[in-house]
Length: 483
Image (tube, rainbow, N blue to C red; front, side, top):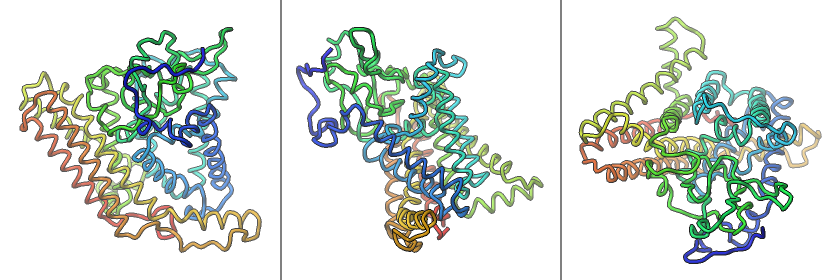
């Protein structure tokens, strides 16, 4: 079937559809756009692996000690806040996964006894525990092994299970990006719903085939049927639906962040109703708690806490003590969420505590991601220029000659300390604002009075103040020679 536009009636404005912009749009519509972006990041990953295994042991002088923990994390949250889920779009781990699908031709479905996001949630908690317990940020060698494990996991899982099992059910980075993309200003969706209603082939989900039945372009492997897709959750920005649509009716549309995700009771393709997905609720609460714990792990009070716990429990194992702090922090937020749900349900006469919890707990996502973004941007803004001496040092060590000049290790911060503080507090405040708006909107839909919403407003306010306190503490300058 030819790819001809058959729009009728109102369509997306060219100004709000990134896929129609002159240069960017041409690249996004190019069939090999994603592969090209993945190859670029694959080269960067190769550089990280090489330096991690064979480069200097001192993290600030090693690509593996700086690029993943300073530049990549900062650029990921910037991309999510300014554009969309660009890392999943350019994810280098998908290249070996694609090879596995061709070589092994998986036929098995993901196990029903491991549904949704539960495996990913466990993986996220274990990763951030290991990050603090074993100081991954300070070990280029361990960082390189983390990258290798990602490549292997993507190859094995998607070589065994069909579809995009690794992205949908396992990948910790992907789940972080899915939740963060709630605040993204763009979304892949149809331009004109009436065109989809007339479509009979549904290539965006089934894929596009030639007359002999040979697959020309796959559809969405995560099961997001464009006609019923809502928001960015589970969307890897792969653009397969754009390539597969025979009517050129799918674009990358600008939008108001959070607006389309606020209706948690609406049935959405590939996900169902968020209010009926306890795994999404647990993922949201877990990521929010981990955001505070990860930031807390980089300020001086954490060392006093670990020392106190060690003396009280007569334990010297840092991994055990970190696990105890993590378990306590996650449990504390979980209890606070349950308590807010209980009080809110009683004040509103809601059907049950569970009914309130499965809806309002999701409002933690903007504030939680606001803290993640503020934290990561702090490290990025205080260490972005380290890429210059790193490159100079790498070339000098590799060739024995200073082709790029002598390493200028004095270079680090992109902005002044004052400006950096202002930026990160603004980002945290925007996340707090998003949580408040979502809470009020859910309250309006449920016809809750102010008394019923007050527990959630207090919880968001307390978390916001805790975030302000954390960001105001002296934080380790990881990834630079200043820290």
